[in-house]
Amino acid sequence: MKIELGTWAVEGNEVDAAGRELAIEARGLVKRFDGFTAVDGVDISVPRGAIYGILGPNGAGKTTTLRMLLGIIDPDEGHRRVLGHDRPTDVARRIGYLPEERGLYPAMKAYEAIAFLAALRGVPLKEGRRRGRELLEENGLGYAADRQIRQLSKGMAQQVQLLGTLVHKPDLVVLDEPFSGLDALNQGKLERLIRQLAADGTTVIFSTHVIAHAERMCNQVAIIAGGKVPFAGPVDVARDRLRPQVRLETRAQDGPWRAALPADARHEGAFWHFTLPESGVEPLLRALIEGDAGILSLSIERAGLHDAFVAIAGEAAARALEANPEEEGRR
Ligand SMILES: Nc1ncnc2c1ncn2[C@@H]1O[C@H](COP(=O)(O)OP(=O)(O)OP(=O)(O)O)[C@@H](O)[C@H]1O
Image (cartoon, rainbow, N blue to C red; front, side, top):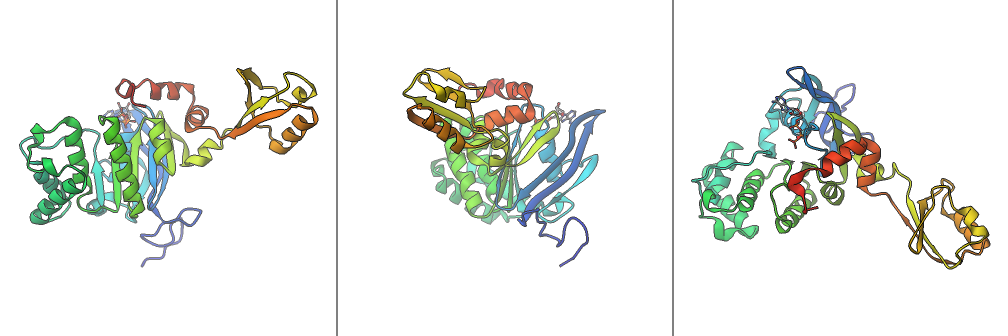
């Protein structure tokens, strides 16, 4: 065990301010391509066992960031520690990586393709073949074990590749746009698989341009736009950047209670909608009751990640997320 002065106290056991162990700690990562800055000072802390999302539009720098974390490319500036090591390639066998560009050898059988990926991570071929068949069976694809990759649908081949990413039981799983190209059924299967991995203690980090995936799946997110990360942390903290919204239904149409509504209150259908005042709900309730509003219903809703994304990354980045044609009709 190595004790160090400075940011990290104990080698292999980096901790964040809350005392949680970190699987990934990146500070000030910068990557330039021919003078163009693709990633511009990214800071990320991924706690062990977390499901962590990198959320941003096309070209935001997600893949470049993941590749730096994996050691496929080196940053021009900044540093990263992955599973306690400064050189991520030293821990490659403890990492599973699903790249954005999918691809398996078309002539290989499904179970062999998994064994091949396992062998690249140091698993003996015989054991890889056994695990390949077992994983396919466990994930409802046993019937396809002996089919060649070229005989599988695109979605099935993608699932086989994902199983090949997990076959060596990695401590850290890095998935680049894992939901792309999957239908709703298989997206649901993948969500369950990711949750199971995290429940078993595996750290999962994935990139996405679909807010709903990040919101449903992740404890923590890094919002990335134009190579910068304006927010990284718990999803709830991002949502709490915006004040909650109140929805109010009253029996009375008018009366002294109307003075209790804040300036942004708007009336739509049967409801008033407005931002919860800084003073909180109790003074509001008191004023409504004393002003004879006749409250029929009142609900307070936390902002969604979409609104938080707009507030943090701006309208243009949110529009770029939504403009992705590949995801049309699948959100
Ligand atoms: N090898 C490279 N050479 C030159 N430019 C690159 C290279 N890799 C990435 N870029 C550029 O860097 C920016 C970030 O790309 P990156 O692939 O990291 O974005 P992304 O958020 O993953 O988007 P996408 O989902 O479209 O891949 C883009 O403008 C891209 O064109």
